[in-house]
Amino acid sequence: MDLPLLPTISTFFIILSAILVAIGWYLIHKKKIEAHKKTMLAAAVAAILFLIIYVSRTILVGNTSFGGPDNLKIYYTVFLIFHIVLATSGAVFGAVTINAGLKNNLVRHRKLGPITSVIWFFSAITGLAVYLLLYVFYKGGEVTSMFKAIIGF
Image 1 (cartoon, one colour):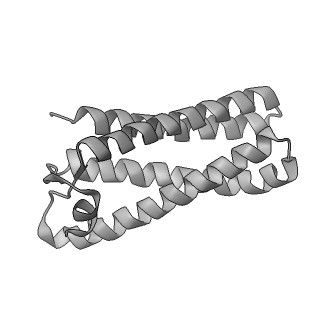
Image 2 (tube, helix red, strand yellow; image 1 turned 45 degrees about the vertical axis):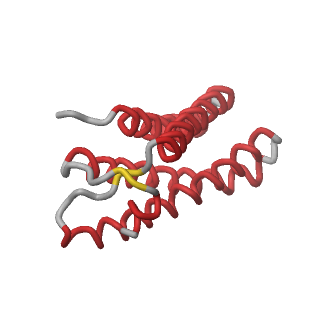
């Protein structure tokens, strides 16, 4: 199987970030605050690496359109938009949650942390599903502008 390098690497980083978030969640439940902090910051770094690779590829190469059957394209598109909303809100929640933790605003951090984590897990899972649909289950379509890849025009 011939998988594209940059999408594979970026997907690895987003899955790694979700795994690190899960480990960080476990650590805080064990009251290991310093280990939690380091793990969650590592999760943020992994997510930022994903974003750098994704944005660079989008700007320099373009996005891959869905190459599967035409009768599935509408379902893929709805799913992709759901993923984009999750990923965007997860990134915003993540930044706010990390900032609250670093500023020792623990009331806010504790309130947002579980919400952010759940959004992030679903974002990572749906991101993996998009990757699988674009490159593993079906051969990717044309590489084109983001808008054309997502909505077809």
